Image 1 (cartoon, rainbow, N blue to C red):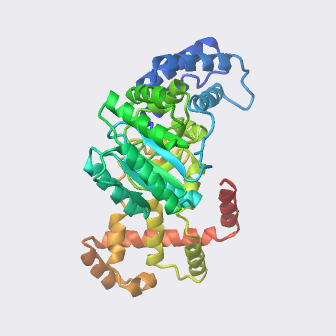
Image 2: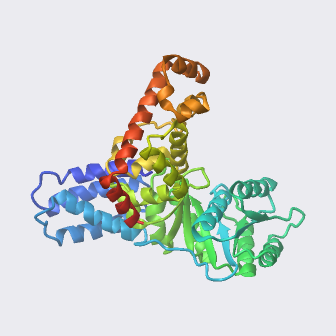
Amino acid sequence: MFDNLSNKLDKAFQILKGHGKITEINVAETLKEVRRALLDADVNFKIAKEFTVTVKEKALGQEVLTSLQPGQLMVKIVKDELTELMGSEAVGLNLETKPSVILMSGLQGSGKTTFSGKLALHLQKKHKKKPLLVACDVYRPAAIDQLGVVAEQIGAAWYADREEKDPVKIAKDALKKAKQDQHDVVIIDTAGRLAIDEVLMDEIKAIHAAVKPSETLFVVDSMTGQDAVNTAKAFNDLLDFDGVILTKLDGDTRGGAALSIKSVVNKPIKFIGTGEKMEALDVFYPDRMADRILGMGDVVSLVERAQEQFDEEQARRISKKIAKNQFGFDDFLSQIQQVKKMGNMKDLMGMIPGVGKMTKDMDIDENAFKGIEVIIGSMTPKERAQPQLLNHSRKTRIAKGSGTSIQEVNQLIKQFEQMSKMMKMMQGGKGRQMMQMMQNMR
């Protein structure tokens, strides 16, 4: 996420290393590279220029604190300005009315349907809501089918009328259905076009007028860069939407949309999509995103993701097993499966301070756990429960059964033993202190 921008900003800050104080000359050199990095990230030229002017004024107006190097002070100023540029603080959804109507808008291919499902799952898990997904794309039967698949995948109700060709009537009928079945949120997935046209805008405007949504969200593919910003402005001029959703932020995005869109339309980015999984949805926190862009990681978001997948009852069972030296491969496998649910592995590593830079050129295989799962699957239930039984002949059988080598089986056993030791240490005083600290970060 924003790897190219992060690398170029890091190089810009290297200019100040070794200087005892901030001067107009070294600030100008640094900010020239910062502006270049922003433009390469497809940030609007005017915004990039205003950004660097503001940073320069603040940098030259401050004395370097005795505990800070000039480079560190500049990073802090840039971080604060990036946070301000992206909206200062997270903005939630307006869910006060019952049912609350959330209207999705955006071009075809922006990810509206997938995001609608992700949002429904988020509302179910985080807000204990009972959402109804509504298919209002009357032009593409595949879009209706896709919403049905998404709804089934997350266990949410959905409404469609394949015979009706008026999306306004479908939306109104869905609203009646929601009231009858006591749904407290209605998420309307509208049609898109490959480009902005009069038919598209008239239709979305008519639906908006008919259902009077409490939230109108504009969904945009962040990989389209400055085009995304221009499209957002066109939609906002017509709909006056409430917030922006950036999808596909896990892709090779340059970051221009995230950094420019708030300034252009003066509407907050509310959520970001960070992967294909239905759980891959994050509330947008400008300060945390600024940290990640500057290579500082995002531990708070990492902890929150872990807590979302954290099964307290299962954790208690495993804790007891660890205390009794009964931690087995089935428990090890369940821990791996929880990690997999947290999202894209490279994205997760980027949340750990310093690790993002180390892994920027690494190709991290999303199927990295597949071999482990296959090896464990080739063990007998008794072997999974009692790892100490794994002698040479058993390892040989497991290697043949899983299509791996005895070395790979031994490597897995070593990883398992290391994790067992680490988890036992975590149950000690320091481990409990660390867990308490993580809880306080919520």
